[in-house]
Length: 232
Image (cartoon, rainbow, N blue to C red; front, side):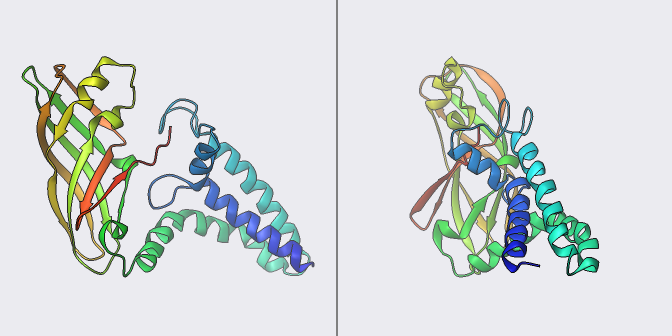
């Protein structure tokens, strides 16, 4: 058995898993790669339509699995026969593993570097009335990976979350200025829940609706970061 072949096959297998399956933020490395090169991970919009990344990734996973099993089989037949089980365990625990790795990587992180936001599980119900008064109730998940408590000011960006810039509603939402809400997250803790926001629309268009995949502004210790993973 060639050591180079074994190394290549294992790396190919691990890359296939990482490319295909969702990590702790709810999407895959493959989604990010396709977006960066100008390709759509989905046939229509994020979390809708056919997941192209999954089809490409599963093809790579099947190829890499059989290549690795063939290479292992020549010298380690018993290990090769158990390869499917090892792959299954890694796939099922991949999101959990990446989440726990972040607690190590960001153990001493401070400010905005200490937090992550699970965008694809977020949503906002909003209501814009005639006089411009705007209310929004948002479900958000924010994780503090550091060993210190975090006090954050959070504010959703309704217009960027709506994304359809050709719609008159986008102009109305773009004129909305919501007041940030203060939250506290314990060391290595997670905030998951509803937050109520209020504000004023400069160009009100009376409308009620619901948005998903919320773009979120988070301010910590004078630092600000806008979380938008920009998956189409």
